[in-house]
Amino acid sequence: MMDSLSIAWKYISYYKARTATLIACVTLIAVLPLALEVLLDESEQQLLSRADSTPLLLGARGSALDLAMNSLYFDDEVPELISMSAADEIEVSGLATPVPLYGRFQARGFPIVGTTLDYFDFRGLRIAQGRQLALLGECVIGAEVAERLGLAPGDNLLSSPETLFDLAGIYPLNMKVTGVLARSYTPDDLAVLVDLKTAWVVQGLVHGHEDVTRTKDDSVIMKRSGSNVVANAKLVEYTEITPGNIDSFHFHGTSADYPLTAVLVLPHDERSGTILRGRYLDAATPYQLTVPGDVIDGLLANIFRIKNVLDAVILLVGIATALALILVFALSLRLRQREICTVFRIGGSRLTIARLLAAEIAIILLVSGLLCAMAMAVVNHYSNGLVRSLFIG
Amino acid sequence: MIEIRALKFGYPDTDFSLRIPDFHVGAQEKVAVIGPSGSGKTTLLNLVAGILVPEQGAVRCGGSEVSALGDAARRDFRITRIGFVFQDFELLDYLNVLDNVLHPYRITKALKLTKEVRDRAGDLLQQMGLGDKLTRGVERLSQGEKQRVAICRALLPSPQLVLADEATGNLDPRNKGHILDLLFDVVQAHESTLLAVTHDHELLPRFDRTVDFNDFLDVDPA
Image (cartoon, rainbow over all chains, first blue to last red; front, top):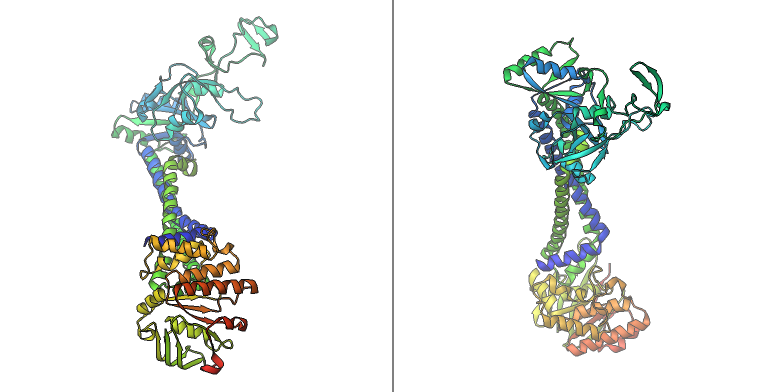
């Protein structure tokens, strides 16, 4: 048998291109359905576990899927905004704890999620390095963000402008990284978590600048009218919050009107949850209170409908490829008739020839199997990220 | 060494029919077989080697009645007792020179591949002027070199009988004489019998005897 394998190995390594093509065909046809299965399992697991652990989600009326995807998985698609008063209403109801979320901005490609410290408790997030958020302008980053950007507590992270072409847009905020989260294998690994007010600073709703009543640079002042001073665009706005300028940061308007993308609603008990859901059933209310698990179930039902189609396509392609491979082997036998005849004439029996061919097929299948296993190991290793980029966005 | 009596053979679905009433080759004799194409010279070699089986009559070789043996026994007989040199060499491109020579030992249990066999293969190739090309791919050899490899493969098991089917047919005149010299030398050294089919009448004087298929055998060409 070893001689058969050795001879078969010499044959397939001599005809490299032919062998590589066969191996590629077999490997691809095996990897495609397996990888799809792994990715779908991973996506199902990621989507469902996150959704199932989130009891209720409050957001603007519109796409419940966009709302869930942005609030749970920090998807780029920002839902219609609601105001902070929506969270206040939940708080006042005494039926649940609201955890406001503002997930609209990004920092170097990672979502900035403005929230409260309740979010960390709710998601069970643990600080692995550094400390928790304490001051305006600080951020805690997910393990994956820290790894990919090479950041650690004490480093700075600049928020990204929403659009490069908005000349009137606000300046990016240079945030201080105070902590890195322990890896949770959830979208939080890929998030930059900040206090809600810091998120509003990123938007420019809360801002800090030099005190116009004390400035000695008259070119900054457009008009003085008693205690009211109007400054022009020359006024320096701070792009970083430091102990020296933190006191100059202030709100304009009422914080209840400040925007949120969603509110995680954590009912105190099942009854409270039911009552709350009843309150938001009225079509006249501008909000929707969704059960994320139901929303994601609907999404998965669609994904798996598509998967069934894909499975059927892959099965057909697999059958076609298998037939093509049989044809290739059959044609190869015809092409090798002379060589087979030689082996027979110098003493090989039909069994020997069959054994040599079987050894060749075995090696091709073995190499394909190894490549398939390696590919699957890669898919498994990156499935978390792949699922996020392919299915979650 | 070879004894054929009342032999009749035909290929299925053809009109070809070969009849050999009586044919003998003595031990260590070097016999040339000539005749027109399609007269059955190669068929004769295949019958002697046990690759083909006659419809009637008997083929005896080295004391064994080859035509009466079963498939496996005929194959073992051919592998161990007969060396076959083909016109188009019948080498395997994916094996190097040494592997081609040792190939029969790797595909059959009738021959045992030992260190002694490997050494002998090396010596034989050295003797054939291929000592420095043992690991070279056969596709990179000249025609003459390829035929020398094929002769080494045929002679490595020290066969009692060497069958050569137009062994020099694909070679240029200079190589032709050289290869035949080598073949005769090795056959002589191994004290083997040589039955060679050839179209080249210039080579006939080098053989002990020539058998003309036209005169000697009862052949019905298709």
